[in-house]
Each structure stands twice: as C-alpha cells, then as structure tokens.
Image (spheres, rainbow, N blue to C red):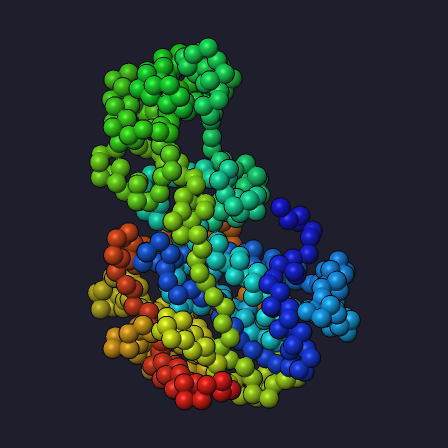
Length: 504
C-alpha cells in the first residue's frame, strides 16, 4: 500500500520515460500537444458508463514531481549495453520539471459513452506523456466500479445496496478506491471502515459466521450479540439451518422489544435466496416483526438481483461484494490515452504559448475501425430535448467536436462506427459542454465537490436518459457522433495515412 507522502511520479510504464528522454534529446520536449483519455466500449455489455476518479487524478497531478529517491532509482537503470539508460543531464531536467498543462475533464458522476473524452490534457508533450499511465490507472478503475455500482443500484430498484467487498478487492488501495467509486455509483454504505473514515461514507455491518460458531448454539450466540450491541442487531442466520436461524432471530427480537430495542433484520448469505427470503418474510411477519429487514449477500451482482426480483424475493437490502469491487466479469474498463494534435513548429512552446503555430491534427490508424483515434482538440456537447416543443425526453444526443469549430448554427453528428447514421441538432437545441477546466497551465482551477453532490449527479444524470440505455440486455445505443467537419477531417487523415504509411 502506498504511503500518503510517497512520490507517485514513477507510477508509470518505462516506455513513458524512454519516450520522454527521446523528446528531450530531440529538442521537442516542450512542443505543445493534446491527448484525450477515453474508452471504446461500455463495460459489462451496458449502454452507459459513469465517469469517476477525477479527484484522485487531481491529487496526482497537483503533487506530480520527481523526488531525489525517484532520480536515484532512475540512475540505476541500464540499457542493453550495460550503460546508464538515462544521462545525468536528463535526470537534472526531470528534477526541475513541473506539471504545466491545461486539463479539462468530465466532472465525476457524469454519464459518459464510448469515444467521448473523459479527460483532455494539453501542454508540453513530455509532461502530457509522463502522466499517461497514472491517469489511465486512476480513471479506468474508478469509472469501471462506479458504473458497476450504478447498474447494481438500478437492479435493486431503489432498495439500499451495501458495498461489502474490501476482503476481495485488489489490494488495500483498490479496496479504498472501490468503496469510494461504489458510493458515487449509488451504494448507500460500505463495510470498509477505513473508507468510512477517509471519505465520510456511512459504514454498516454486524457479525460473521465465526461469532455463531464460537458459542454453544445459535440462539445463545444471537442473545450474546444482542446483549453486547442491542442497537445493531442484524443476525446472520445461515450458519447451520437458515429458517431455524430466522426463528432464533425472532426469539431474540421479542427479547429485545421490552428493553426498548428492535430486531433490525436478518442476513441470508447462502442457498436459494428467493425461496429463503420469502419464507423468512413469512416467519418474521407472523411473529409481528414486519419492520425487520431481510439483507442478502452471496456473490450478488445486477443480473442476480434482477433475477431475484423477478422471482418475487422478499429482500429489502442488498450486500454486494466481490463482483462489485473487482468489476466481476470485466476486469478493466479498457480506456486509452491518445495524441490528437500538436503545434506546428511549436518546439519551444508550452501550454501557455498561445501563438506557437497552427494545430496539426494527429490520428492513429488501425485495421480495426474501433481502434482508429479521433483528431483535434475535442469537446463533448450534450444536447437535450427542447422543452418548448413539449418534448420531455431528456438527453437526445452527444456531439464530439473540435473546440475551434463554430456550432452556433447547430450541427450534424455522424456515428464513428457507422458513417450512414447521421443526426441533425438544430441551433436552438439546449446543450451543455461536458469537459470543464480542471487545470490551467498547471494551476488547479476546479474544486472537487463533496461525494454527496457527485452521487446526486449520477442519479440526476441517469434520470435524463431513456430507460432503454439502462437495461442490462441489448441496451439501446444512445446517439453519440463526431461533428460533421471533424468526421470529414478524420476520414481525410485516414486516407493520407494509408496512402503514405508513416507520413507525418
């Protein structure tokens, strides 16, 4: 686990440093460039994603610097010939290097779609390059888990979801990041006490099977727990016989009542959760404990929760762990970070050098259409239905456009995956530009909001989209396209690259 005061400048792949060295040797380290961080496909086969991780990215960029221990380590690296990989003058350059880029990003909690930049970095190419790996690491994981949490909460249909995944998370840092992202995505609380302390997330939890196993019998165990914590009684009932465990919980519930306390609920952690929850509800209700909740766990995810709902399960609270904090069936988001423009003749120009020359669009070409990058300095404009027309459909389309393009007359968007799909957005269509300034010439100009505001942004954002994009099977494809002139520029760059392989 990384300490809070440890330099993270070396949280990068070696090739970022070898390229940085190459830029420095070639005299182009300060040439101004633009990179975009985006993903090509929604995770989990879904119809949307939730942008997350920006606050950690801000902290990384604000503290980006090579300390003496970093430089001492880099000095030990050798090339194939056994000589030093980096010369001392380059290490001196890194010692003085400061992050001086402009950064624009989608605020955390924003609903996002494939090809849309979640984050744009503009500045000296050496700085843009050196932060690539860490930004991808931070944004990819946070976005993956926030999206998973949003899907799980949609499946729960407004019932509380508790994140129980710390013990199965990808290390201590992964556990903390996952708890935060899950809370942003809609989870009500976490079992991770350090996350509660660090982020102010509500914490929930009672006891494990080991508590029951320690005592002579289950009823004795429940009574002992109730005596110790009468205000926190949710009993895990499946250690020996689940329905008999529910009956034991009822007995303790009746014991608690004259003391001024109540049985908060029971937890089911194995077996046929639909059947057991229905029977448990019957037992609790017949005993007059209608307000006792039924909590379920056991490797749940959105698909299983939706299935249990369809089966009439009487579960009130959902404890979701492994498949939430690890991403379950999808281990990574698959976000990428691609160069899209450089200044012409701007070898001496940094982020603040506004007159360094015209921008030259750059593109990465591939035999796979999905892997062809988009050129230019991109922004995402989200259009909403015009209320004057009596249309309350919410968001209707997103346009990816170059910031130097005038959209005051409206625009036509073209699906990057299918050029036959067009959509016209008129000039009076309401819109919001999604990328907002985060850093200006390396100085932070954005204050991250509290988690409560980010959670509310997720809820509000999702409510603005058609239910079809939120379904789990064959979701509706929300219209996202390149603004027409950007699409045409992309096609021209592809033609040029294929006619002259390796061309500038």
